[in-house]
Length: 455
Ligand code: GBH
Image 1 (cartoon, rainbow, N blue to C red):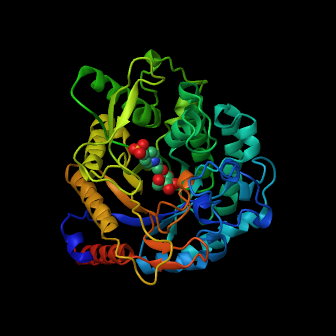
Image 2: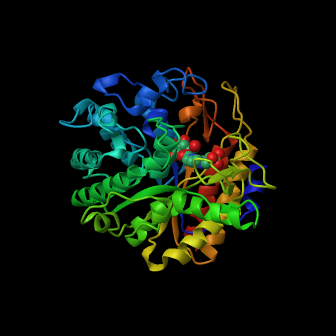
Image 3: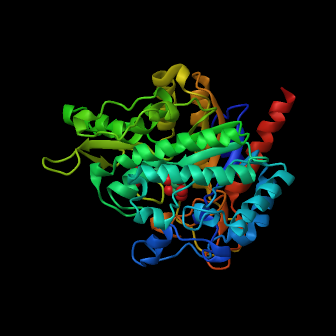
């Protein structure tokens, strides 16, 4: 059955395949080896901001079980593994000397991956800002970008001899909009448009870290943004304007500076970025790839008069949705539309695209006695890989596709209530049980590789 689903959709040839996780979501072991505190420790420890009040422990407990993760990746046959490095394991206070025990964990992980023939492709920052830096203003402050450069220096020096591919910052849009503007994610601030300096400081941190990592021998460094395809709820002028504004804020505010060296014109919205001399050159230094995380389309209507922001998100009509609710619609051609639009908009400035995350959660039990038949996840993945193939057929260069996630894990404010894994993980015993989608992805990778070998 899994195979039948896979054959319904085209599969692009020549792609590299990967699967992803992030440190805070899978590692557990929050007190091990001198690890410091991040804004996510603060968020979970309030005991009320996370849906099921879970604390990210033990979860997959990858800090102690990375050998199991590597074996699962090896079994899948992926070319690469996307994981993230925890800043507070490396620098417990977000500044100063490195913590050798924390770094040693990543050292072992990298060696284990290389031994298994898997290219390590870490993310330097996946949302876990050291708490002391947040106390000082977090990403609202330029100094945080400077601290980030220091952290990149330590990690580059430690791993740069073996790690050549890096993502700098994961989804600055989520940190800015959900973390600082509306407060759904850490650090839980509700600054609305006043959050926007966090955009510039994260992009600046990306630019500085990329230069540093290249200095340590990296051959591919890029940012990875969350992108969505924005459609107006109706063709009324008000909805079209609202959708345009949302597209500017969610997509172009993050992509334009990196790909064109300038922010889109947001002055009309009262937005001014704290740009200093040289920043835009650094931010737009050509990257070897552009990272795109894609989950769902976004349908936008004009907000009622007097609302704090001029747009509201409404369900995308006529589409099914994931376990995350009716706003997370499933519309694969929205991914094709985003990719082809980006290729048109940015032209030669757009480097090859790496899909850094794509995946879906559906309600699944915490305990299983064998492989879950997660056919809806298989459908989601197959149809989105097909959407990538459609974009490739229209001339977009996509080099890599990454499933979110290798493992069921701590889904931020939703705790362990949303499961994205190819591999089921129960919350308390950290037992890993591959789902049907794991076997499906394994077969897909094997098939495309043997097709390539024949070609
Ligand atoms: C990614 O972020 C994260 O990088 C990863 O850590 C996380 O586990 C994964 O995705 C799954 O959530 O307003 O209902 O339309 C996800 C970024 C931004 C995707 C908000 C969905 C819109 C939800 N998300 N977006 S909705």
